[in-house]
Amino acid sequence: MKIEQRENNIFYNVIRNETSLTEVFCNLMQYKVFRDLFLNIVNQKRIKLSLEVFQISSIKYNDFSTEKDLKVKENSSEFGRGDLIVKDKEDEYICELKIEKYRKLTVNQPESYLKYLKNDNSRLYFIIPKGYMHKDDIYTRWNNETGYSKEKIKNHIIFWEDIIKEIRKKELDKLNIFINEFCNILDYRWFYYPNIKFSKYEIELLFQELKNKKKDFAMLQNTNLPKVISKLFEVVEKTDDKLDTTEEAKTDKYYGYVVKNKDISKEIEIWFGVDFEIWEKCSFPLTIQIFSEDEQQMDKIKSLDFLTKFQYEDGQITTFIGLNKDVFENEESNIIEVFEDKINEIVEKMKRT
Image (cartoon, rainbow, N blue to C red; front, side, top):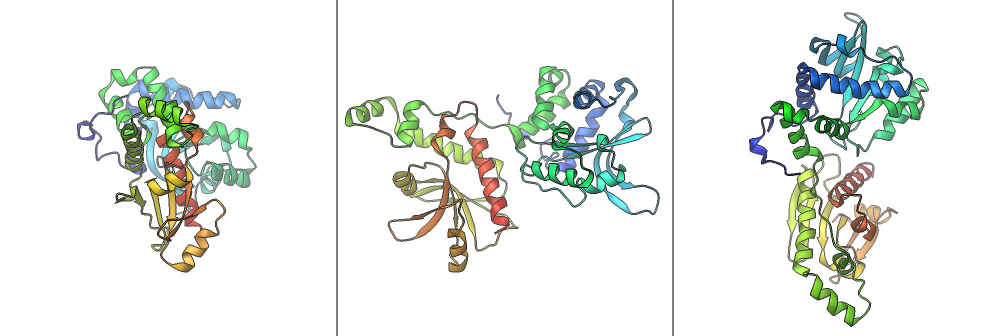
């Protein structure tokens, strides 16, 4: 799939976060084909739980609203603010939208929403990316609040990727320019990952698994080493495109970016990319490193059991986690998406350190 240049998209600099996404998503409900598609997706979830389905023909555009303050009555205490509200007859359904994989739940999600709904589990839905990092929090907190089981909660979760897939399957993107641009901007900002693949020979070269000189010579004939390194750099660049909080950190010894996050101590540095010395000695062409110049912080980092300590030839010490060979070999996964998810996972862990 080719992603158009961002400046050519109607929603460029309009859809930038969950709030703007919610407004556009709701506005698109004015198109019956889009509205019906979304309600059908929800109905498929409800059928699995033997719940009453939406009467799609009776729900109109005016039955959708956004950013509603949830109150039982005027001047009563609030139960948060619902992202997208769908009204069917006299009942309200709350849809909580998350678009960033790392965005945490608020104090209201889902507990206060469920209190507002008088513990009617059937009227709450989450629309999230497939790689959402706090999905287990949804299960745990929802179950703790009402006793609703994880297996049932799974049918209250809708993935953005599935919505886009269904839109394109029904060819709604070809019928309406705004729906097409909506899908494209979501791809551009969040969901499209270039599919960079490494051949068997390239993978063996990356992980230094040459058995003898004859094989070494044959491989060098079949694999262009500069091309392989260029592919690695492209993975790093495309991963950086998915992470808005990074700064460039490259030299002739490494090529990558430093993650900047306000919730992590300024004394801690999280870097990702290609480190040639670690690659040479440990056979990890792509790594995520955690380092601090503060000795106490560094001692704490070195004690984390998910990190490997590494000492450079100049004596400096860092810690890292690398992408294993199976990530490169897996035909079903996308290496950029795996790398991004792993970086976000490390960031979340370091927030708690």
